[in-house]
Length: 311
Image (cartoon, rainbow, N blue to C red; front, top):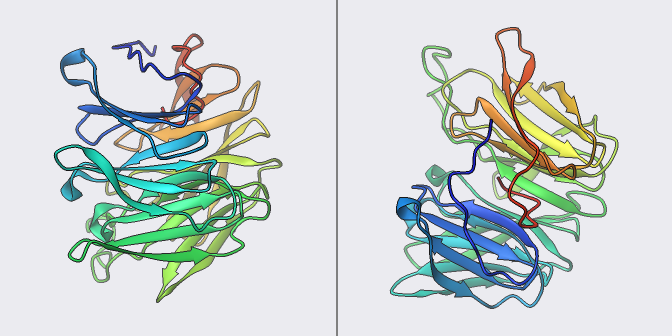
């Protein structure tokens, strides 16, 4: 069963929409409908607020930590149509703001560090922005994927940069892995995008959901020759998509739940999937040797903090 190791009183004055632990598990970032982002030191099972970041003027939907090789960097996105990148020097402060979306920005995700300091942003205006930092000059470049999803994009997630292990594929290390990301939207589609020169192209369109796709998550690569993506939807289903060539994808319906499913999140090793939704349950799933997904833990009473996403 899922057990509570520690509780954090965030002091937020409204619903919490995202809570993310950093790479080392030493800091926690939260964001809320109260327009704020907060950062906590959580070492040793204790917690201490070290920053309260105020620049958004609407509900903040999601926060995401960059890889620590770039320093202590945090991204946030909001209903106010802005994406803000925060950085800790002596104190936390805003180092970049992107405000060229026409509607709410619903999701932010950092690329694998092997690709550099790159942030993908999905918006209700139907577009996906790719923000790339030139760390040597401390400048940012923005590219857009227009009309990525009709009505809007709800979630983005990057393909791991790690290549399959050479023992599985002797040609795998001949060429570097291209940049790919997956998105889910209000058109009921899961779409995979690949960088092609100076533009992004739609590589695959995965069609099985019958309602808005609320979250997508690309599984970490542990050296196996296949890759997996999890998606969840207002149709109450979680689907795991598998491929060994990034072209042909095989869907498996993990489960049909009792309510809308808001979030899917992989473990660091990519073999356990956490699912949460409107039924106020957190369930953990693992694929057995017969390639069937089995529920290995069910917590029907998680801490009540209003969070919908990002376990």
